[in-house]
Every structure is written in structure tokens, then in C-alpha cells.
Image (cartoon, rainbow, N blue to C red):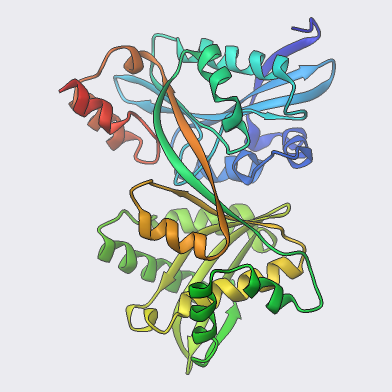
Amino acid sequence: MSSSLHIERLDPATCPEYDAFVQSCEAGTIYASRAFAQFLAATAGGTPDCLIARKADSIVGVLPFCTGTVPDRGLVLNSLPWFGSHGGCVLQDPSDDAARHALLEAWHERALAPDVLSATMVLTASEEAFRARYVAHTGARLGDTRIGQVTTMPATEEDQPGALLAHLSQKTRNLVRKSLKQGFVEELRSDDEAWCFLYQTHRENMSALGGRSKPWPHFEALRRCFGPSGLRLSLARCEGTPAAALLLLLWRDTVEYITPVVRQEYRSRQALSFLIYRAMLETSAQGYRNWNWGGTWQTQTSLLHFKAGWGAESRPYSYLVSGSWSDHAPDPNEVDRALQALPYYYCYPSHWLKQSC
């Protein structure tokens, strides 16, 4: 390891130099950005933090994470918390093993502290190729996996609609064509009424699925931290009535699929397909190349198939878990206590608890 390489810590939410570095990295993601650190500080609980690898005066790598507190018990580290986030190393040069090694050793040292209950790192798809090195340098265990899915959108062409439709499966093309005949009108909105419709319909949709919805303060924080230039909120109206909405985050050349919602009575008329198609058409014409659908459980076959219909390719990624709970199975009640204190953190793999019972 180069003697000029050293590790320091800083708050990514308050450091412009950090954000400029992440923006410059080919493998940088919105989840490593300063805006997302500010968002996590407002919503996930705990404190944003970051390990920085420097050579001389230049940043060559970063490892963002958050530290959450379980009262009277200890700490939980996540790189990173919240729905579908990724963490791990972001390197100026992905082949820089010295910087990756130094960052992972510093993470390992932090995870070994006696007050750390659990430390989870969610790898990006690009760092998944180096998973064996993560395990070797941190002693972490594979706690979970997800399947990330990304659509590479066509470059701007004279016939952009035709190029985009050709990128989709036959079934999805048919659904899009159906949606275009329903009389929907797309509106790009940023007002309170649009955000309220998004939130209320999201709650209804998640309740119908038996899932957990994002709280209203999280939508407020997204709106505040990313601003009009960093997000895209669209509504589909039918004869003046809101039918569906789609919230996307925009970062460099990537569109992040954050919250899609649709009123039940417009589902069969493909109101959401209409909004996705319109958003893909506009963002690809603006130069965005990647549409990140986020992670999906391997058991969610219908959702995997839906995303694949939009031209998405699978990019698996891992959750690597260390900390004292990784070595000694905790009491399930202690894990429940941690989840109650830190509901947006990954605290412990549920299947490990089942194995220890």
C-alpha cells in the first residue's frame, strides 16, 4: 500500500469537495451523493458519515455510511440505509485495490468496536465483482442478495419513440400502445397538490399489497434535498382526474425509479405504463442513458418480469454483514428493538434468526 495513502472521516452532507468527487467517478451513484446524505440525515435517523481515502491532497476513494443508535444497546452501521440504497466503495479508479483495501480496513476497524451491534454494507452492482475482497478485508458474511435491474435507454435518434419501443418486449409494447389510446394527459408538476396525490395513492397502493409505505416526511425531504432539477414528478390525468403519478430522481446520466402510484380504477387502462413510457421518452432524449429500477427479491418473479419487459438487465448485488451480531446470534427481541429504533436500517438477516432458533 502506498505510504501516501491515508484515511480520514468527514460528514458527506456538508462537504462540497466530497460531492464533486462522487460526481466525477464513473461508478458514482446518487446514493453516495451529498444530497442523499442530507436526505438520510433528515429521514433515516442516525448520523451520515464517510471514510475518505486520500493520496497527497486528492480524494481517490470514499465509503459513505450512516450510524444509528439503539438506545441502551449500541450502534448499527449501514452503508447505506433506506429503501433500495447502495453503499460500499466509490473509487476514482475501480482497479485501485490499495484504496479499496484501505477503506475496507477502516470500515472493519469501526465495525469491530464493542458498541457496534451490526454493520451492513450494500454493494453497488459495479462493486459486486469485488465481493470476495470485501469479505476478505472485513470478515463480513453474506446476509442477503437482491437483483438490481437497469434499462440502458437508446441514444437520441430521429425516431426516438420507435427506438424506445423497439427496446421493449412485445407484451410491454402492446401495453404502452394501449395506454396511448386511453386519453391520458401527462403533467409535470411540483406543487403541493401533486405531492399529496403521490403520497396518498402510494399509501393506498402499499396497503393493498400489505407492504410498508414511505412516510410523508420522506417525500417532503426528497422534495427539499433534491429540488426541481434533481427530480421529476409527473401525473397522468384522464378527463381532468388524476389517475397515476411517477416520482423519479435524476443524477448524472441515470434516472432512479423511486415511487410509482396508480389509482385502482385506472390500473387496467395502463396509466402507469403511460407515465413510464413518457418519462423514458423525455429523459432519453435529454441524454439520460440508464433507468435504474432498483432492487427486487428473487422471489418477486412477476415484478422481475415486469421490469425485464421494459428492457431491464439483471445486476445482482449483496448485503455483507459484520459486527458482534454477525459472530453471535442475538436474541430476536434485541433485533426487534433495533428495528423499532431504526426502521430504515438493515439490522440483521431474518433468515439467520430462523436458523438460530
